[in-house]
Image 1: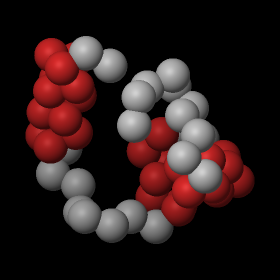
Image 2: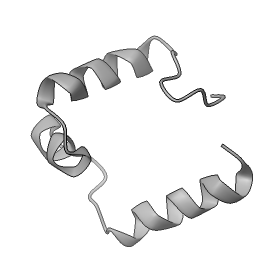
Image 3: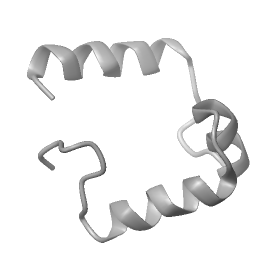
Image 4: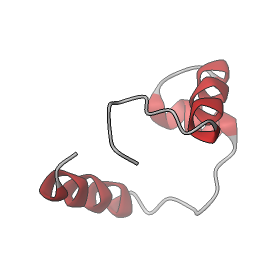
Length: 56
């Protein structure tokens, strides 16, 4: 993501006033996916893989 887009994304998420930690069911509801999908996203993040082509 570009710096400007990253800032816009962070600002949008901050406006949602979400807690620091969420349960997988809460994340699934927020992303409109299943809890199994959340597990896949988390495991991909732990391995350092980029799901969206972003540089970590």
